[in-house]
Image 1 (cartoon, rainbow, N blue to C red):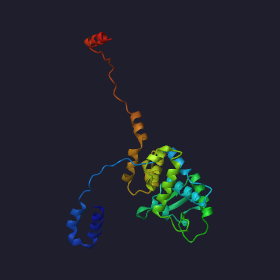
Image 2 (tube, rainbow, N blue to C red):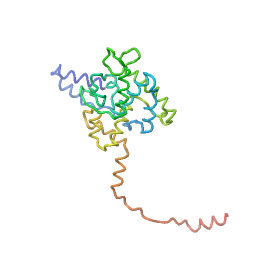
Image 3 (spheres, rainbow, N blue to C red):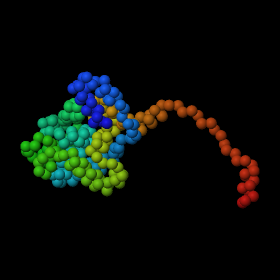
Image 4 (cartoon, rainbow, N blue to C red):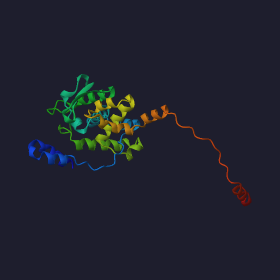
Amino acid sequence: MAAIRAFFRFLQHREPAALEQIRRVLAIPFKRTDTRLVVHFDRDEVQALLDAPDPTTRDGIRDRAMLHLAVCAGLRVSESTGLRIADVGAQAASFRVLGKGRRERALPLWKPAAAALRAWLAVRGALSTPEVFVNARGDPLSRWGVAYILRRHVLTASQRCASLASKQASPHVLRHTCAMMVLQATQDIRKVSLWLGHANLATTEVYVRADPGQKLEAIETMVPPNLRKGKFRPPDRLIALLKTKM
């Protein structure tokens, strides 16, 4: 259905004579599906994952920097693999990313993420490839390569944090994790939207549904109705029957 709608949006500029029929096709609603809560990692799971790469190896330094950036900046996998050396600021304290819809945004980095990125840039060496994260051959990492690296480190981290073994692990889960961390720290959905580069604030509302903190604040501010006090008294015949059976 998404492909059909995209095709008819293309046609409305090429075939004006069929505009009425095209609009009827575009008005067909999508089939309703269940909207589930987003999967994300909690703080202990994030820490176990970030500690999983081996910092004494070149691949471990690369993986640690990549995971830190994914969690800190909430990058899409395409943004992570497409990040270029020229986009990283001085001292690796911030960077620019060209996101979905060709919308560019600038993001700061927390100090551990900046230190991990500087460590990787120091051992990366001078390569002709402009992308920041490269494989052993010096080629840019693919989205499948990033997913494989993440699964491998989740398996290692699950030995330290057992709850990771039962959770779905994908690069987009790290993006959800970043969104939940920003929301819980700021309690401002607009900042989450700006951080993730969403074009529409409605897209960010999914994280509000997954965060129980704001609901708890609402419960604390409301005055619940009083519960009428009472005491249950069993029938006398029942008590008498029980006493006879004793």
